[in-house]
Length: 241
Image (tube, rainbow, N blue to C red; front, side):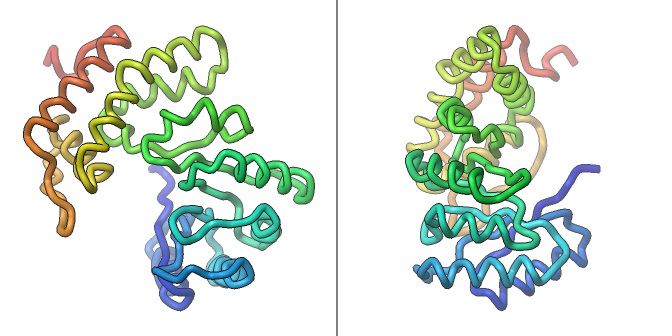
């Protein structure tokens, strides 16, 4: 009922294998993660992602983060490659992203998609929107979808009223959540999964090498979620049930 974007990574041979398995399983697109450990030159990165994009009929979004950092010229080449439709930034270098957007806009016809892929992307959403990057991914949709959707609607409205809601949620929920997330290694995953359990969905514990968040941190997360909902003028969706 919803599009599924599958992750694929490691070296080119394994990335291609995972991509083909995802296509066979019915995935709608691919998120191409950085090559495992290798810090490659730009020519090698173009070859890797071009071969991956050519291996299936699925659309590919290239993920910039960690050891996969691209020059504007490289992103132009990737944007011209068949099958590569977008670029997700998990690096956070705004100067680089502005130059990437400008270079592709000036040299590649048609629409090329850009995503803010930083952890809890809402926190940097207004800055990215300023350079033309309006799409983003956020784990908050997993455990507090009402808060995430309210932010998304306000963010995309682009009105003074919408931005006021955005800033209210940033101050009252997102910034404190990011500060809480920074208290533990791997909390970008384990704290989110704890939030899903707080909502009543039994998704089990995180898998090693991640560990469960401290009890006091889970309690703070629950308080933050309620505070975020109060700022929207409603309580937990199941509170009256």
